[in-house]
Image (cartoon, rainbow, N blue to C red; front, side, top):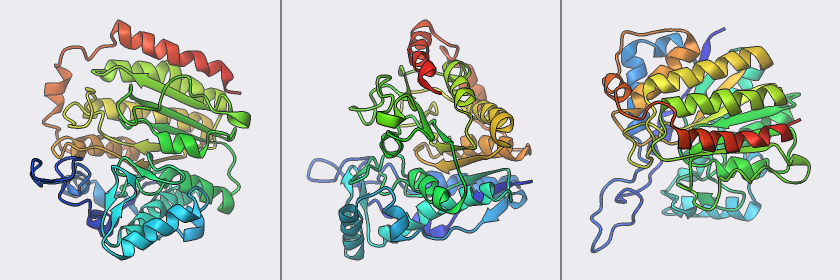
Length: 366
C-alpha cells in the first residue's frame, strides 16, 4: 500500500490579510504579510513535485465536510457567525484568526481534506496519508477560533469517522510547537481518544498545555501534555517520544494515530524557539510508524498545522513524506548540516526533568 496525499489549490486562497506577522497594521505598524500565509504550504508542495516524490504518492481528492459535520464539535452560533462574516468581507473568528471572503467554504474543505485522509486509511486503501490543508485547526475551540484556526480539522475528522466507520480508540500526537488546545477540548471527557501534545511551554495559548491537564470525567487520564523548555532540540524530542509518547500509545492501544503536524518547532521558525531539524522530524515519523505497525496495522494520518519558516518547512515536510512513503529522493536539506552542529541539540538536564514530570501521568492511561 502507498502513501496518500491531500491538497487543493483553494487552501492557498484562504486570505489572512496584510497583517505584520500577527499584528493588525496601523499608523505605527506597517502593513505586511500575516504569519499564516500560503508560502510555506506552497513551497512544501512544490518541493515534493521538484523532488519527484509527489508523483509516487496517491492523490486523495478532498471534499468539504457538511455543516452538520462541523457541528459535531462546534456550536451552531459559532458556525453561523463564521458563515455570515465569510459571505461578506470576512473578519476574525475569535483570537488571532483573521479570514477573508470565502474562508468558510475553504475551512470546510480543510476539515474535509483531513477526513478524506482518515477515511482512505481506515478503508485500507492506504497505509498512511498526509493532508496538507489550510486553514489549520488544532487551536480552534468549540465556540471560537484561536491562533489562525477556524474549525478543528482533526477533531471533526475523528468525530465524523466515528459515524461512518466502526472506529474505537484513536490517539492524536500533536508535535506543533504550540499547544493543541482545541483538540484537547474536543476530547477532554472522552476515554476513547488519547490526546497527546508536545509543545513549547507557555507559548500559545499561554493559559493551557500544562501537565496537570489530564482530562475530566470519563476522560480523566486520557489527555497528556508534554510542555518542553524553549531551546529543546532533537535529543529532547526523541527522549520525550521514547519515554512518554510511545509508552502512552502502547498503554492505550489505538486503532488509528492522527498527528496534528506543525513544523514550527523547526530551528528557524519565527513563532517558536525550538531546534528541530528535518532529520529530527524524519526520526519522529519513523518512531510513530513503528509503533503504528505494532499497534494498529500501520494506520497513521498527519494533518498540517503550523510552520512559518518558508525556507525550512519544505525540507521538514519532505523528510516526513520520504519516511512515510519509504522513498528517499536526491534532495538535500541545506539547513540540516547547519542545525545538526548547533550547540545543545542533545538532551539537557532541565529538559529531562520536564519529560520525567510529564511521564508521571502515564499510569492514568488504561
